[in-house]
Image 1 (tube, rainbow, N blue to C red):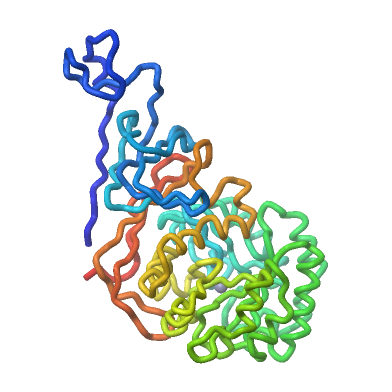
Image 2 (image 1 turned 60 degrees about the vertical axis):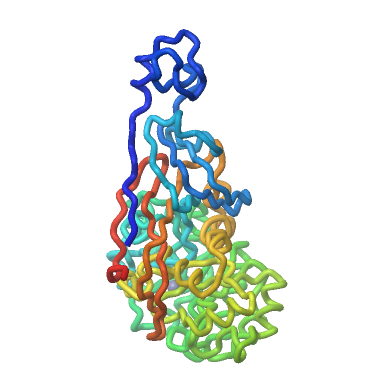
Length: 422
Ligand SMILES: [Zn+2]
């Protein structure tokens, strides 16, 4: 695996050795040969230099530097390294906004599927994350106290329409349909607008039993009343996908669009016309890898047909964060390996989920001067075996978050949880 060691050098003290009263800006002093910079021009705390900056929100895809002071980005452009108190060399790497995870399960200590938020996400390059339905109205206050308030990264959620939430995979949270209490969900959303950004229903037969249609209709009414989107988990639904899609509104989300389970998006090699039509009227599709919902076969065909997910998420949970999912960047690496353009994948893991989750108004998902200093530096490793959720694997390079900056500070990353690169 190729890895670069970050170069750090202090710049300020060198100026003291210059005796030229009018030093050359950003150059070498002719008299004393000391490196100098204009004292009237401020220094940056940190400059990420030499990388290719990819920021789909602004359309930036070019080699340049990113300068940070305090918790803000203070400049983006060429030749900023001379003004950096600390300089990190990103040559050969891709510099992107701090990633935004649109679908995860991080209700640790309460739900059996809850992964540790900071460790699974922040320390792997993700600065904001949406929990997708692990908490319901009856467990939300614990989610807020144990997860939202105890982790450093920004956390929002899709509230499970069942008051129970997803506590244990073995027992479908809607097998008793009375657990969908509209008033409780509405009250929780109304009291927690900083966190609740939508609702989630898992529509698989083992979760909803024979009541899928009544429960889906009720969930749509709930989402309509709260003026929030509804995320619908597909795969092993009783009805074919087009029947489910008929109920969804613009802004609603289909999770697990590359599932290999019955009732997915494909008919042979082509994407179902009803899926295309739903996308055209504003229904969103979320890749949400998960333990059992990314099939390389389905993804390869869909990507060849030009069908990329609107939201590229990992569906990380305690069931899969040691494989086959690992983390969001591994999910991105897999779709890139299957032919999805890197910049389009980055868009779907930064600005697109930020907009969906209402986090764009807080500056997430983009790089801009004066904006949040959340930056992830991606370095391609040598080839490694990457598994899907259906028992297949591909051998491809992987994107590793070699530098993660959050609120202007360097995050201590953790190693990839998969096997060693070949
Ligand atoms: Zn999920």
